[in-house]
Amino acid sequence: MIENIKKVPNSLYILCALFFSFVLRFYNLNYRGLWNDELFTAASVKNNHSFLDVISYVSKDVHPPLHNLLLKAWIELFSYDDFSMKMFSVCLGILGVYAVYQLSKLLFNQKVALIS
Image (cartoon, rainbow, N blue to C red):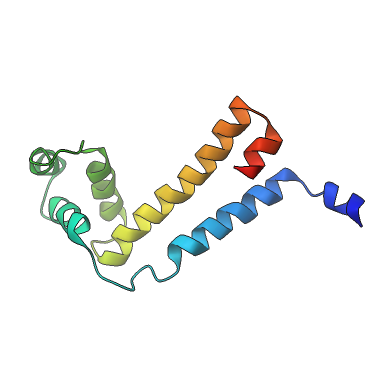
């Protein structure tokens, strides 16, 4: 039985970790509406704003505009609503989990990457 566990490919562990991270981020995604910083971001990427309008709007904030520009592109593809904007952050979070895995594998080894 233990020999069979060792034969499980690492990609299955990665897929399970990514799925689990998705479930944790997706659960109760719309339990509450948008909050302060999310409202500022939503106002900056309104449907009637162009990408230049987003940059000028965000220039009043201390944060760089990359997140807002990527979110603007996201809502152009999907829709301008709470769920869609929060789903963008869910996708970035899952990509972050995968990036940590890849970086750990690059800097250390496969075993450390799976633990991370």
